[in-house]
Length: 342
Ligand SMILES: *Cc1c(COP(=O)(O)O)cnc(C)c1O
Ligand code: SF4
Image 1 (spheres, rainbow, N blue to C red):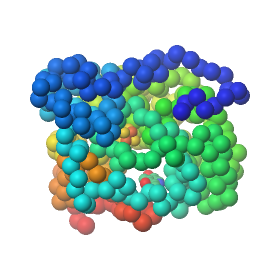
Image 2 (cartoon, rainbow, N blue to C red):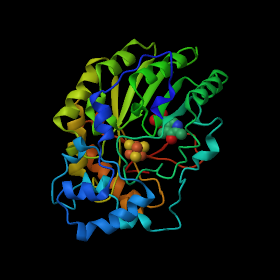
Image 3 (cartoon, rainbow, N blue to C red):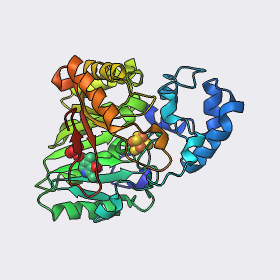
Image 4 (cartoon, rainbow, N blue to C red):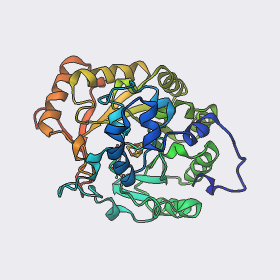
């Protein structure tokens, strides 16, 4: 998928992050063995989950998981389990009915002035709770020709001032491909803002290459990178260094997290996460309530629990370190935010 760009751009080969991505754990057995978890106990379930949504865990993330601890909050986000096979009626393959908002392949235009631009189906990791775990990326991954069609759509809609590169993960594209895409987007006069939604900086921090920073620095767009982190243990020192480098290059860096049962549904953990992010130059943006996606019901918490957590955060953190508690409703043109009072 990353090789769709031909000719006009120089090839950058063999960057560290690319080999890290290639050598990520993609087999539950190897992952269990590395983490010293008993295959007798976990392998059968892991294989069943893996059949529904492939295992992908980069080594740099696996290193942050405590060995022999089946309850590790980072492990629970990435290890496939038997629970994923549960079919519960209110949990659907497309909980947000996103397919209804795709005017051209690879583009989601649901909110008035901003579009989600699906650049790649690949991610640095496969999070077991991903609300796009059933997303038909193959149909929505139209390559360079499709990108140009999506850009035409944006050209014809002058109300759009922001493009959000999403996925999958847009940073699974090479720097040269991103540069190519951004340069074409820059030809649309009414676009002002560029946003990148990516879990790469957390998963494989070596993705923050000097080349990437150059691409983001030279664009005429005001750029924001929104990372995805759910737990303070995810922010290792090398992640923190990469994030500070982005901030020091003038890029706004925000975080969106997801509230996940048994992983971060504690105010202490969420408060720690806010501090750790801020110390890495990142401000919390959203804390998403879980979208009811099939195969991930075991991660769900309640709105009541979420409100209690946010209230405890409000008590103990400055306002700028309290994320907005948000969720999406199919058909609504913005995210619904919850406070302890509504
Ligand atoms: C979340 C989302 C956005 C971005 O929303 P913001 O509130 O601006 O972060 C845009 N489009 C869709 C379809 C989304 O789900
Ligand atoms: S990084 Fe984001 S899009 Fe990719 S699997 Fe995780 S939650 Fe889904």
